[in-house]
Image (cartoon, rainbow, N blue to C red; front, side):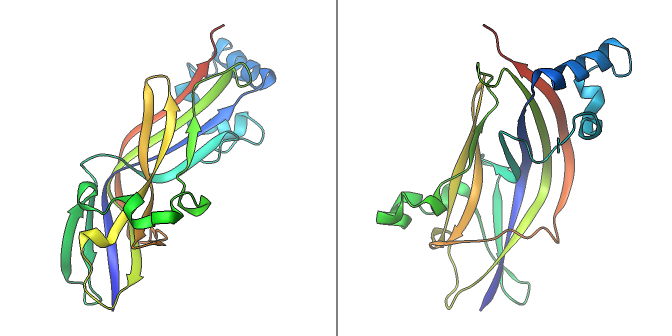
Length: 202
């Protein structure tokens, strides 16, 4: 039988872009000249200001439409008739390492990671963060028997920040199958939008 898994809760997109000296000068000059009040005021206009920059695809890392690792994440399973048959949270799902067994170190099961902590190599990092809440996405899968919460597990990802790691749900799995998210029915309410530059302090 075909099933649909709906994912609800907090969702975010984040990217880190390493600014070179020329790009940083362009931004600072525009602010000093009064064309913009701040980096936040530039917002998505940064895509026109910085050649080759795209908000959702940083040159250091990017994670898009990922669910935050919190108790607010809820999953609902529907059968092919649209009947809800199961609802559960992250803590109800199976343990990843028990599910994977000897395959735990395979690359396909590794979560994405990144860092927005500036270093000597990347002294100025342009950080984009967008947060939303609602119906994030759907996953579709087939099963001969009625699924339970223990048939699902998740792979975590992590982004290093100056205030600690930002953990998130990178992949959702049915048994050992990684499910592909579809966003055709997603419905999200915008909650936060940030642009900032993290700079290295020697």
